[in-house]
Length: 524
Image (cartoon, rainbow, N blue to C red; front, side):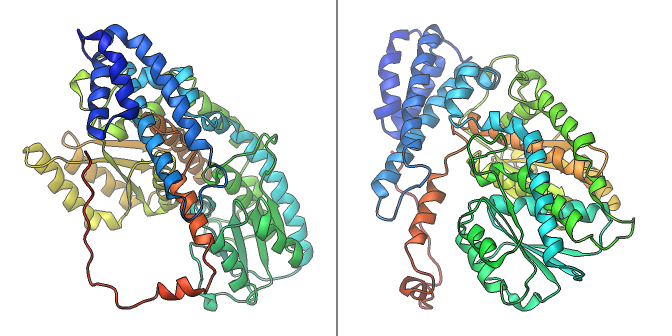
């Protein structure tokens, strides 16, 4: 894709530099290998081999992760990740985003766990969790006959919170329930807002999330109406011990709805929570009527739609016809590459920062996409909601674009609007005018208009589309979308410190310096 190199035989030394060189030498090797078009086939074969070798280093410590004091192993994983990134950057420069994402070979060796393949099983997620939630409903009705529920609180973090933020938005956007649904991301929640009329739901993919187990202990004396959504472990044990409804996530690898990481479980948990809330407590009607399980229409509408969406932006759909693949490259580099031409004129060393912009009625979706960009794609991203950002962020957007146009500064942002008919009417118009006046023809921005006939369909469309997009972005960015070595390491380190123990008390020290500044070590 990128020029010619008369020193074709030089590629052997450059491939060696990808593995053993300093950061500066590694970058020079990537540039040299990209330019060596006469040896591109053999270079790509070597690149594939390097990716496989480094992936093995990344996968060896999983799923249990590293423990405190194993910094050398952690640094070995980071080194392997950097080498893999350099190798994939080389392949991207040679093949282009279309050649890389449409290559069955490279997709398979980068996406070692098969996350893209699992994204094609959402219809199994819906069928499985609908049935499991219906089973939990029977126990709920048996345990809590003729109880009044005035408040629903769902406790979760990360991939076990985002689905419930979206659930709360969907129910609110239908305007068919007047019951307040709150999602709490906490370690030690304030129990003062919880009483006997509160339904408390505890969500943890693994069942061992320290903060959610602690939330369960804190809330237990305040309300007996409690439900658990998990694969098992500690939260599962609590559910069995207290005889409370337990919605079990798939735990067996041969289950077609099985996923590996919490962030892959958004469809599982969203289906379970909507089914349970609509079928168990009979949400008090809202301004447009009552919300029932019939409004979800899983078999009649949702499952056919999931298949249709997969056929439009799944991995088999070529880059030039695949909006999720094109958006992934655009958010990473700010380049509208349509799948034709030479990438040589573009700078593939200047990655962008996606800035996600949504209406407040779609807050859960915006938060979910930012989280997936962080964990899955390994890119920094920021997120704002309207109408709030329309009263402050627009000034910095305008200033940054004007400075960039006048060559005074490099604007690192790509603005990503996730739109839908669930936006507040006045805010929908204001967003249109903001794009027209501030961004159109001046800045880098993308707009996704969510499809669907109701709030549930539109939300699920946005989540499904962006799950594919962020997975493609991970591959383009040089990462297998599954491993999270730093998070795993930190969780294991924290697990070695007792709750309310000496280290926790020492962390409350008040004599810390007013300000601490730090700079990175020499990168050479």
